[in-house]
Image (tube, rainbow, N blue to C red; front, side, top):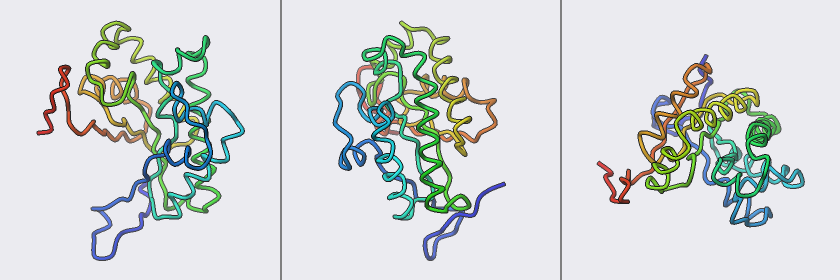
Length: 207
């Protein structure tokens, strides 16, 4: 059943939904240290920063967002395996934590009936780099990519998200893998593409 959503004055409720903004940057501004290896996942890995993540979600809700996105954008193989020997075992629990922190923020705002939580299916390798993404998919194999998206999709589902967001996909191939891995989880799936739609030579094709 669709949740009621807040609409802007004079605009149909079926036309506009206000989403949140960057979680990673806001969390850094609020005190999570900058980390050039784990990026925004630093706030998930170290429990002392969980409260900052909750507060960041709450700020977006209080500012009028009716959709907030889990803070697991950086929980992905390319970042995790350069930090953790057991990176594969960490993917699911850290993603689950991201979902539960978003759920807690919504609960504290008493917004269960008005705010939806989108579970992030992030770029599998790097943002805005379709060339690196294509190489990653070729070298790692589609089966490994499907395992990754399936693993985080299931963790987000367990954590209590309302829908999945394939976020800033670099290419249709990457989006296809996210869709294929999560299509039977019973959650709505939104697709967000990298705006320039660059090819592997980094030439933009936004049309």
